Image 1 (spheres, rainbow, N blue to C red):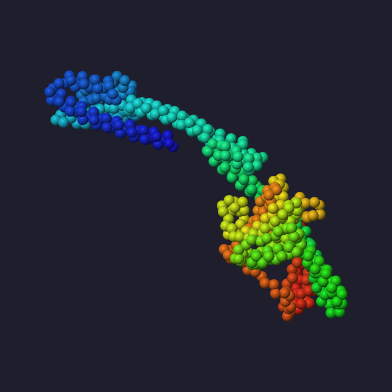
Image 2: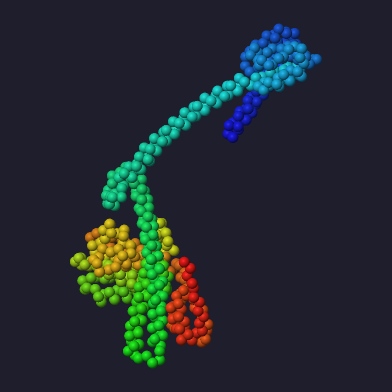
Length: 507
Protein backbone atom coordinates (compact mmCIF):
# COMPACT_ATOMS: atom_id res chain seq x y z
CA UNK A 1 0.00 0.00 0.00
CA UNK A 2 2.83 2.41 0.84
CA UNK A 3 4.54 1.55 -2.48
CA UNK A 4 1.35 2.31 -4.43
CA UNK A 5 0.91 5.64 -2.65
CA UNK A 6 4.59 6.47 -3.32
CA UNK A 7 4.36 5.79 -7.08
CA UNK A 8 1.07 7.68 -7.43
CA UNK A 9 2.60 10.66 -5.65
CA UNK A 10 5.71 10.42 -7.82
CA UNK A 11 3.63 10.31 -11.02
CA UNK A 12 1.68 13.39 -9.98
CA UNK A 13 4.93 15.15 -9.17
CA UNK A 14 6.39 14.34 -12.62
CA UNK A 15 3.24 15.53 -14.39
CA UNK A 16 3.33 18.75 -12.43
CA UNK A 17 6.98 19.37 -13.26
CA UNK A 18 6.43 18.52 -16.96
CA UNK A 19 3.50 20.94 -17.11
CA UNK A 20 5.48 23.74 -15.47
CA UNK A 21 8.42 23.11 -17.82
CA UNK A 22 6.16 23.07 -20.87
CA UNK A 23 4.39 26.30 -19.99
CA UNK A 24 7.71 28.06 -19.35
CA UNK A 25 9.32 26.72 -22.54
CA UNK A 26 6.19 27.31 -24.61
CA UNK A 27 5.88 30.98 -23.67
CA UNK A 28 9.56 31.55 -24.45
CA UNK A 29 9.55 29.67 -27.79
CA UNK A 30 6.35 31.34 -29.01
CA UNK A 31 7.91 34.75 -28.38
CA UNK A 32 11.12 33.73 -30.22
CA UNK A 33 9.37 32.07 -33.19
CA UNK A 34 6.93 34.95 -33.50
CA UNK A 35 9.87 37.36 -33.75
CA UNK A 36 11.67 35.21 -36.38
CA UNK A 37 8.48 34.79 -38.41
CA UNK A 38 7.89 38.55 -38.43
CA UNK A 39 11.45 39.03 -39.69
CA UNK A 40 11.04 36.19 -42.20
CA UNK A 41 14.02 34.38 -40.72
CA UNK A 42 13.05 30.77 -41.32
CA UNK A 43 16.64 29.56 -40.95
CA UNK A 44 16.88 30.73 -37.33
CA UNK A 45 13.66 28.88 -36.52
CA UNK A 46 15.00 25.63 -37.99
CA UNK A 47 18.40 25.91 -36.31
CA UNK A 48 16.91 26.79 -32.96
CA UNK A 49 14.39 23.94 -33.16
CA UNK A 50 17.11 21.38 -34.01
CA UNK A 51 19.27 22.61 -31.13
CA UNK A 52 16.46 22.48 -28.59
CA UNK A 53 15.37 18.89 -29.32
CA UNK A 54 18.91 17.62 -28.77
CA UNK A 55 19.07 19.05 -25.26
CA UNK A 56 16.77 18.60 -22.29
CA UNK A 57 13.47 16.80 -22.03
CA UNK A 58 12.00 18.13 -25.31
CA UNK A 59 11.54 15.30 -27.82
CA UNK A 60 10.08 17.39 -30.65
CA UNK A 61 9.19 20.93 -31.79
CA UNK A 62 6.61 21.15 -34.57
CA UNK A 63 5.08 24.13 -36.41
CA UNK A 64 1.55 23.68 -37.70
CA UNK A 65 0.35 25.89 -40.57
CA UNK A 66 -3.03 27.51 -40.97
CA UNK A 67 -4.50 24.45 -42.72
CA UNK A 68 -3.56 22.19 -39.80
CA UNK A 69 -0.72 20.39 -41.57
CA UNK A 70 2.72 19.93 -40.11
CA UNK A 71 4.88 22.65 -41.70
CA UNK A 72 8.17 22.02 -39.87
CA UNK A 73 9.27 19.06 -37.79
CA UNK A 74 12.29 18.84 -35.45
CA UNK A 75 12.66 15.52 -33.58
CA UNK A 76 15.40 14.33 -31.27
CA UNK A 77 17.54 11.50 -32.61
CA UNK A 78 16.70 9.25 -29.68
CA UNK A 79 12.95 9.51 -30.17
CA UNK A 80 10.79 6.43 -29.50
CA UNK A 81 11.05 4.07 -32.52
CA UNK A 82 7.28 3.78 -32.84
CA UNK A 83 6.81 7.56 -33.06
CA UNK A 84 6.34 8.08 -36.81
CA UNK A 85 5.72 11.74 -37.70
CA UNK A 86 5.97 13.12 -41.23
CA UNK A 87 5.20 16.39 -42.98
CA UNK A 88 2.11 14.93 -44.62
CA UNK A 89 0.31 14.48 -41.31
CA UNK A 90 -2.20 16.88 -39.84
CA UNK A 91 -2.49 18.05 -36.23
CA UNK A 92 -5.05 15.37 -35.27
CA UNK A 93 -2.84 12.53 -36.50
CA UNK A 94 0.04 14.07 -34.56
CA UNK A 95 -2.00 14.06 -31.37
CA UNK A 96 -2.96 10.40 -31.85
CA UNK A 97 0.65 9.37 -32.51
CA UNK A 98 1.90 11.12 -29.36
CA UNK A 99 -0.91 9.85 -27.11
CA UNK A 100 0.02 6.29 -28.15
CA UNK A 101 3.35 6.77 -26.31
CA UNK A 102 2.86 6.51 -22.53
CA UNK A 103 5.96 8.52 -21.69
CA UNK A 104 5.25 11.43 -24.10
CA UNK A 105 3.15 14.52 -23.42
CA UNK A 106 1.98 17.01 -26.06
CA UNK A 107 1.49 20.77 -25.51
CA UNK A 108 0.02 23.06 -28.20
CA UNK A 109 -0.46 26.83 -28.36
CA UNK A 110 -1.31 29.45 -31.03
CA UNK A 111 1.40 31.83 -32.24
CA UNK A 112 0.21 35.47 -31.89
CA UNK A 113 -0.27 37.40 -35.19
CA UNK A 114 0.35 34.22 -37.21
CA UNK A 115 -2.14 31.65 -38.48
CA UNK A 116 -0.10 28.64 -37.31
CA UNK A 117 0.50 27.06 -33.93
CA UNK A 118 3.44 25.63 -32.04
CA UNK A 119 3.51 22.06 -30.67
CA UNK A 120 5.94 20.79 -28.06
CA UNK A 121 6.46 17.07 -27.37
CA UNK A 122 8.00 16.41 -23.95
CA UNK A 123 9.46 13.09 -22.73
CA UNK A 124 8.93 12.02 -19.06
CA UNK A 125 11.71 9.39 -19.14
CA UNK A 126 14.71 11.63 -18.36
CA UNK A 127 12.88 13.35 -15.54
CA UNK A 128 11.70 10.02 -14.10
CA UNK A 129 15.23 8.63 -14.30
CA UNK A 130 16.59 11.66 -12.43
CA UNK A 131 13.90 11.42 -9.72
CA UNK A 132 14.37 7.65 -9.29
CA UNK A 133 18.12 8.10 -9.05
CA UNK A 134 17.88 10.87 -6.48
CA UNK A 135 15.25 8.90 -4.52
CA UNK A 136 17.44 5.80 -4.49
CA UNK A 137 20.46 7.73 -3.26
CA UNK A 138 18.36 9.50 -0.64
CA UNK A 139 17.00 6.14 0.53
CA UNK A 140 20.48 4.66 0.74
CA UNK A 141 21.73 7.64 2.74
CA UNK A 142 18.72 7.41 5.11
CA UNK A 143 19.23 3.64 5.46
CA UNK A 144 22.89 4.21 6.25
CA UNK A 145 22.17 6.79 8.95
CA UNK A 146 19.31 4.66 10.31
CA UNK A 147 21.66 1.67 10.59
CA UNK A 148 24.28 3.81 12.32
CA UNK A 149 21.62 5.17 14.71
CA UNK A 150 20.39 1.66 15.58
CA UNK A 151 23.95 0.47 16.21
CA UNK A 152 24.72 3.50 18.38
CA UNK A 153 21.45 3.02 20.31
CA UNK A 154 22.19 -0.70 20.75
CA UNK A 155 25.69 -0.17 22.11
CA UNK A 156 24.51 2.73 24.26
CA UNK A 157 21.69 0.66 25.77
CA UNK A 158 24.02 -2.26 26.28
CA UNK A 159 26.62 -0.13 28.01
CA UNK A 160 24.28 1.98 30.16
CA UNK A 161 21.38 -0.43 30.79
CA UNK A 162 21.87 -4.08 29.86
CA UNK A 163 25.39 -4.51 31.23
CA UNK A 164 24.54 -2.68 34.53
CA UNK A 165 21.43 -4.87 34.92
CA UNK A 166 23.47 -8.03 34.27
CA UNK A 167 26.01 -6.79 36.80
CA UNK A 168 23.24 -6.15 39.32
CA UNK A 169 21.79 -9.62 38.78
CA UNK A 170 25.22 -11.14 39.23
CA UNK A 171 26.07 -9.43 42.50
CA UNK A 172 22.56 -9.17 44.03
CA UNK A 173 21.92 -12.90 44.35
CA UNK A 174 19.56 -14.22 47.00
CA UNK A 175 22.30 -15.80 49.14
CA UNK A 176 23.50 -12.40 50.34
CA UNK A 177 22.15 -10.93 53.55
CA UNK A 178 20.44 -7.52 53.48
CA UNK A 179 23.50 -5.96 55.16
CA UNK A 180 25.84 -7.35 52.47
CA UNK A 181 23.52 -6.10 49.72
CA UNK A 182 23.42 -2.61 51.24
CA UNK A 183 27.20 -2.60 51.45
CA UNK A 184 27.51 -3.62 47.79
CA UNK A 185 25.03 -0.97 46.66
CA UNK A 186 26.92 1.76 48.53
CA UNK A 187 30.08 1.04 46.47
CA UNK A 188 28.34 0.94 43.08
CA UNK A 189 28.20 3.90 40.64
CA UNK A 190 25.10 6.02 41.04
CA UNK A 191 23.24 4.74 37.96
CA UNK A 192 24.04 1.11 38.82
CA UNK A 193 23.11 1.66 42.50
CA UNK A 194 19.69 2.97 41.45
CA UNK A 195 19.17 -0.10 39.27
CA UNK A 196 20.32 -2.35 42.12
CA UNK A 197 17.83 -0.81 44.55
CA UNK A 198 14.98 -1.11 42.03
CA UNK A 199 15.97 -4.70 41.26
CA UNK A 200 16.07 -5.61 44.94
CA UNK A 201 12.66 -4.04 45.63
CA UNK A 202 11.16 -5.82 42.63
CA UNK A 203 12.78 -9.11 43.64
CA UNK A 204 11.53 -8.83 47.21
CA UNK A 205 7.99 -8.08 46.01
CA UNK A 206 8.14 -11.10 43.71
CA UNK A 207 9.42 -13.38 46.47
CA UNK A 208 6.73 -12.07 48.83
CA UNK A 209 3.94 -12.79 46.36
CA UNK A 210 5.43 -16.22 45.64
CA UNK A 211 5.47 -17.06 49.35
CA UNK A 212 1.86 -15.91 49.69
CA UNK A 213 0.88 -18.13 46.77
CA UNK A 214 2.60 -21.19 48.24
CA UNK A 215 1.12 -20.42 51.65
CA UNK A 216 -2.36 -20.19 50.11
CA UNK A 217 -1.84 -23.54 48.38
CA UNK A 218 -0.78 -25.23 51.61
CA UNK A 219 -3.66 -23.70 53.55
CA UNK A 220 -6.10 -24.80 50.84
CA UNK A 221 -4.83 -28.38 51.00
CA UNK A 222 -5.01 -28.48 54.81
CA UNK A 223 -8.38 -26.76 54.69
CA UNK A 224 -9.80 -29.39 52.36
CA UNK A 225 -8.66 -32.14 54.73
CA UNK A 226 -9.87 -30.36 57.87
CA UNK A 227 -13.16 -29.37 56.28
CA UNK A 228 -14.02 -32.95 55.41
CA UNK A 229 -13.12 -34.22 58.89
CA UNK A 230 -14.85 -31.32 60.66
CA UNK A 231 -18.16 -31.91 58.88
CA UNK A 232 -18.50 -35.51 60.09
CA UNK A 233 -17.08 -34.65 63.51
CA UNK A 234 -19.58 -31.82 63.97
CA UNK A 235 -22.41 -34.18 63.08
CA UNK A 236 -21.28 -36.54 65.84
CA UNK A 237 -20.94 -33.66 68.31
CA UNK A 238 -24.41 -32.46 67.37
CA UNK A 239 -25.80 -35.91 68.17
CA UNK A 240 -23.90 -36.00 71.48
CA UNK A 241 -24.94 -32.53 72.67
CA UNK A 242 -28.53 -33.04 71.53
CA UNK A 243 -28.91 -36.30 73.43
CA UNK A 244 -27.24 -34.73 76.45
CA UNK A 245 -29.86 -31.99 76.39
CA UNK A 246 -32.64 -34.58 76.13
CA UNK A 247 -31.17 -36.63 78.97
CA UNK A 248 -30.77 -33.63 81.26
CA UNK A 249 -34.36 -32.55 80.61
CA UNK A 250 -35.80 -35.89 81.79
CA UNK A 251 -38.05 -35.27 84.82
CA UNK A 252 -36.78 -38.06 87.12
CA UNK A 253 -33.04 -37.67 86.55
CA UNK A 254 -30.84 -37.49 89.64
CA UNK A 255 -28.60 -34.48 90.40
CA UNK A 256 -25.46 -36.65 90.30
CA UNK A 257 -26.27 -37.79 86.78
CA UNK A 258 -26.96 -34.19 85.79
CA UNK A 259 -23.50 -33.24 87.06
CA UNK A 260 -21.91 -36.03 85.05
CA UNK A 261 -23.86 -35.05 81.95
CA UNK A 262 -22.76 -31.44 82.43
CA UNK A 263 -19.11 -32.55 82.47
CA UNK A 264 -19.67 -34.55 79.28
CA UNK A 265 -21.41 -31.56 77.69
CA UNK A 266 -18.51 -29.26 78.56
CA UNK A 267 -16.06 -31.73 77.01
CA UNK A 268 -18.21 -31.88 73.87
CA UNK A 269 -18.26 -28.08 73.65
CA UNK A 270 -14.46 -28.00 74.01
CA UNK A 271 -14.18 -30.51 71.18
CA UNK A 272 -16.46 -28.31 69.05
CA UNK A 273 -14.26 -25.31 69.86
CA UNK A 274 -11.21 -27.23 68.61
CA UNK A 275 -12.98 -27.86 65.32
CA UNK A 276 -13.84 -24.18 65.06
CA UNK A 277 -10.20 -23.28 65.63
CA UNK A 278 -9.04 -25.75 62.98
CA UNK A 279 -11.49 -24.28 60.51
CA UNK A 280 -10.40 -20.78 61.50
CA UNK A 281 -6.75 -21.19 60.50
CA UNK A 282 -7.86 -22.59 57.10
CA UNK A 283 -10.24 -19.60 56.64
CA UNK A 284 -13.16 -21.98 56.02
CA UNK A 285 -15.20 -21.05 59.04
CA UNK A 286 -17.10 -17.79 59.39
CA UNK A 287 -16.39 -17.06 63.02
CA UNK A 288 -19.07 -15.34 65.09
CA UNK A 289 -17.69 -11.85 64.61
CA UNK A 290 -18.85 -8.95 66.73
CA UNK A 291 -17.93 -5.31 67.07
CA UNK A 292 -15.78 -5.01 70.15
CA UNK A 293 -13.29 -2.64 71.72
CA UNK A 294 -9.93 -4.40 71.51
CA UNK A 295 -8.40 -2.84 74.64
CA UNK A 296 -10.54 -4.61 77.29
CA UNK A 297 -9.79 -7.98 75.68
CA UNK A 298 -6.06 -7.24 75.70
CA UNK A 299 -6.22 -6.10 79.34
CA UNK A 300 -8.06 -9.31 80.28
CA UNK A 301 -5.40 -11.42 78.52
CA UNK A 302 -2.59 -9.56 80.28
CA UNK A 303 -4.26 -9.95 83.70
CA UNK A 304 -4.73 -13.67 83.04
CA UNK A 305 -1.16 -14.19 81.90
CA UNK A 306 0.40 -12.25 84.79
CA UNK A 307 -1.05 -14.77 87.19
CA UNK A 308 0.87 -17.60 85.54
CA UNK A 309 4.07 -15.90 84.37
CA UNK A 310 7.28 -15.70 86.29
CA UNK A 311 7.84 -12.44 88.14
CA UNK A 312 10.98 -11.89 86.08
CA UNK A 313 8.96 -11.48 82.89
CA UNK A 314 7.96 -7.86 82.40
CA UNK A 315 4.64 -7.80 80.52
CA UNK A 316 3.48 -4.29 79.59
CA UNK A 317 0.93 -2.65 77.35
CA UNK A 318 1.14 0.61 75.40
CA UNK A 319 -2.00 2.14 73.89
CA UNK A 320 -3.78 5.46 73.77
CA UNK A 321 -6.99 6.08 75.64
CA UNK A 322 -8.99 5.91 72.39
CA UNK A 323 -11.25 2.98 71.67
CA UNK A 324 -10.07 0.59 68.96
CA UNK A 325 -13.24 -0.89 67.49
CA UNK A 326 -12.76 -4.03 65.39
CA UNK A 327 -15.06 -6.81 64.19
CA UNK A 328 -13.66 -10.12 65.40
CA UNK A 329 -14.52 -13.25 67.33
CA UNK A 330 -13.70 -12.24 70.90
CA UNK A 331 -12.85 -15.76 72.06
CA UNK A 332 -10.64 -16.29 69.04
CA UNK A 333 -8.82 -13.00 69.60
CA UNK A 334 -8.32 -13.97 73.23
CA UNK A 335 -6.82 -17.31 72.15
CA UNK A 336 -4.56 -15.69 69.53
CA UNK A 337 -3.11 -13.31 72.11
CA UNK A 338 -2.57 -16.15 74.59
CA UNK A 339 -0.66 -18.10 71.93
CA UNK A 340 1.49 -15.10 70.94
CA UNK A 341 2.37 -14.30 74.57
CA UNK A 342 3.17 -17.96 75.21
CA UNK A 343 5.51 -17.98 72.21
CA UNK A 344 7.15 -14.78 73.47
CA UNK A 345 7.64 -16.28 76.92
CA UNK A 346 9.27 -19.38 75.43
CA UNK A 347 11.55 -17.15 73.30
CA UNK A 348 12.77 -15.20 76.36
CA UNK A 349 13.62 -18.17 78.57
CA UNK A 350 17.37 -17.64 78.16
CA UNK A 351 17.19 -13.83 78.51
CA UNK A 352 18.34 -12.27 81.77
CA UNK A 353 15.66 -9.54 81.80
CA UNK A 354 12.77 -10.84 79.67
CA UNK A 355 10.41 -8.17 78.34
CA UNK A 356 7.15 -8.59 76.43
CA UNK A 357 5.35 -5.52 75.16
CA UNK A 358 1.87 -5.33 73.66
CA UNK A 359 1.10 -2.12 71.78
CA UNK A 360 -1.97 -0.92 69.88
CA UNK A 361 -2.07 1.93 67.41
CA UNK A 362 -3.72 3.02 64.19
CA UNK A 363 -2.00 2.36 60.90
CA UNK A 364 -2.61 3.50 57.32
CA UNK A 365 -1.38 0.97 54.77
CA UNK A 366 0.92 2.31 52.07
CA UNK A 367 1.37 1.04 48.50
CA UNK A 368 4.07 -1.50 49.42
CA UNK A 369 1.92 -2.92 52.24
CA UNK A 370 -1.03 -3.32 49.86
CA UNK A 371 1.19 -5.16 47.37
CA UNK A 372 2.26 -7.60 50.11
CA UNK A 373 -1.34 -8.09 51.26
CA UNK A 374 -3.70 -7.66 48.25
CA UNK A 375 -6.73 -9.09 50.13
CA UNK A 376 -7.05 -6.18 52.59
CA UNK A 377 -10.53 -4.65 52.70
CA UNK A 378 -9.28 -1.24 53.82
CA UNK A 379 -6.12 0.84 54.10
CA UNK A 380 -7.16 2.04 57.57
CA UNK A 381 -6.05 -0.52 60.11
CA UNK A 382 -5.70 -1.13 63.84
CA UNK A 383 -2.19 -2.47 64.44
CA UNK A 384 -1.63 -4.78 67.41
CA UNK A 385 2.02 -5.72 68.09
CA UNK A 386 3.44 -8.34 70.43
CA UNK A 387 7.18 -7.60 70.92
CA UNK A 388 9.74 -9.62 72.84
CA UNK A 389 13.49 -9.40 73.42
CA UNK A 390 14.08 -13.12 73.06
CA UNK A 391 16.45 -15.12 70.91
CA UNK A 392 14.62 -14.37 67.66
CA UNK A 393 13.89 -16.64 64.71
CA UNK A 394 16.53 -17.62 62.18
CA UNK A 395 15.97 -16.84 58.50
CA UNK A 396 15.74 -20.53 57.58
CA UNK A 397 12.78 -20.97 59.98
CA UNK A 398 11.12 -17.59 59.40
CA UNK A 399 9.61 -18.47 56.03
CA UNK A 400 7.83 -21.55 57.46
CA UNK A 401 6.33 -20.08 60.63
CA UNK A 402 2.77 -19.92 59.20
CA UNK A 403 2.80 -23.54 58.04
CA UNK A 404 0.41 -25.76 60.01
CA UNK A 405 2.15 -28.08 62.49
CA UNK A 406 5.55 -26.43 61.91
CA UNK A 407 7.40 -25.82 65.16
CA UNK A 408 10.96 -25.58 66.44
CA UNK A 409 9.93 -26.57 69.96
CA UNK A 410 10.60 -29.97 71.44
CA UNK A 411 8.09 -32.76 70.92
CA UNK A 412 5.11 -32.24 73.23
CA UNK A 413 5.74 -28.54 73.82
CA UNK A 414 3.28 -27.40 71.18
CA UNK A 415 1.47 -28.64 68.03
CA UNK A 416 2.66 -25.75 65.85
CA UNK A 417 -0.82 -24.40 65.11
CA UNK A 418 -0.70 -21.05 66.92
CA UNK A 419 0.63 -18.82 64.13
CA UNK A 420 -1.18 -20.74 61.39
CA UNK A 421 -4.48 -20.22 63.24
CA UNK A 422 -3.66 -16.53 63.64
CA UNK A 423 -2.85 -16.34 59.93
CA UNK A 424 -6.19 -17.89 58.95
CA UNK A 425 -8.12 -15.75 61.43
CA UNK A 426 -6.58 -12.51 60.15
CA UNK A 427 -7.44 -13.52 56.58
CA UNK A 428 -11.06 -14.13 57.59
CA UNK A 429 -11.16 -10.65 59.21
CA UNK A 430 -9.89 -9.00 56.02
CA UNK A 431 -6.66 -8.08 57.78
CA UNK A 432 -3.05 -9.30 57.75
CA UNK A 433 -0.26 -10.64 59.93
CA UNK A 434 3.48 -9.99 59.65
CA UNK A 435 6.45 -11.19 61.69
CA UNK A 436 9.78 -9.39 62.05
CA UNK A 437 12.60 -11.17 63.81
CA UNK A 438 16.39 -11.00 64.24
CA UNK A 439 18.43 -13.55 66.07
CA UNK A 440 19.62 -12.44 69.54
CA UNK A 441 17.51 -9.25 69.19
CA UNK A 442 13.88 -10.37 69.41
CA UNK A 443 10.63 -10.85 67.52
CA UNK A 444 7.69 -8.60 66.67
CA UNK A 445 4.36 -10.05 65.58
CA UNK A 446 2.10 -7.44 63.95
CA UNK A 447 -1.64 -8.05 63.59
CA UNK A 448 -3.53 -5.65 61.30
CA UNK A 449 -7.31 -5.42 61.79
CA UNK A 450 -9.67 -3.32 59.61
CA UNK A 451 -10.53 -0.15 61.54
CA UNK A 452 -14.33 0.01 61.93
CA UNK A 453 -14.21 3.80 62.30
CA UNK A 454 -13.69 3.83 58.53
CA UNK A 455 -15.58 0.64 57.54
CA UNK A 456 -19.30 0.04 58.17
CA UNK A 457 -19.63 -3.19 60.10
CA UNK A 458 -22.00 -5.94 59.03
CA UNK A 459 -25.08 -7.08 60.87
CA UNK A 460 -24.37 -8.95 64.08
CA UNK A 461 -26.74 -11.68 65.17
CA UNK A 462 -27.69 -11.41 68.82
CA UNK A 463 -27.83 -14.59 70.86
CA UNK A 464 -30.94 -14.49 73.02
CA UNK A 465 -30.59 -18.05 74.36
CA UNK A 466 -33.07 -20.89 73.94
CA UNK A 467 -36.48 -19.85 72.59
CA UNK A 468 -39.37 -22.22 73.30
CA UNK A 469 -41.99 -22.75 70.63
CA UNK A 470 -45.77 -22.50 70.62
CA UNK A 471 -46.64 -24.99 67.94
CA UNK A 472 -44.70 -23.33 65.11
CA UNK A 473 -43.63 -25.56 62.23
CA UNK A 474 -39.94 -26.02 61.37
CA UNK A 475 -38.55 -27.76 58.27
CA UNK A 476 -35.37 -29.59 59.33
CA UNK A 477 -32.97 -30.58 56.54
CA UNK A 478 -29.72 -32.53 56.89
CA UNK A 479 -27.77 -35.35 55.27
CA UNK A 480 -27.24 -37.29 58.51
CA UNK A 481 -30.04 -39.43 59.96
CA UNK A 482 -28.65 -39.22 63.51
CA UNK A 483 -28.57 -35.40 63.39
CA UNK A 484 -32.14 -35.27 62.04
CA UNK A 485 -33.42 -37.65 64.73
CA UNK A 486 -31.70 -35.86 67.62
CA UNK A 487 -32.50 -32.33 66.44
CA UNK A 488 -36.15 -33.18 65.79
CA UNK A 489 -36.55 -34.59 69.31
CA UNK A 490 -34.95 -31.47 70.82
CA UNK A 491 -37.20 -29.16 68.80
CA UNK A 492 -40.34 -31.14 69.62
CA UNK A 493 -39.48 -30.99 73.32
CA UNK A 494 -39.15 -27.21 72.95
CA UNK A 495 -42.70 -27.04 71.55
CA UNK A 496 -42.22 -27.02 67.78
CA UNK A 497 -43.80 -29.08 65.01
CA UNK A 498 -41.03 -30.60 62.89
CA UNK A 499 -40.95 -31.78 59.25
CA UNK A 500 -37.85 -33.79 58.34
CA UNK A 501 -36.07 -33.82 54.99
CA UNK A 502 -33.08 -36.11 54.46
CA UNK A 503 -30.61 -34.91 51.81
CA UNK A 504 -29.11 -37.78 49.83
CA UNK A 505 -25.46 -37.39 48.79
CA UNK A 506 -24.66 -38.24 45.19
CA UNK A 507 -21.25 -39.68 44.46
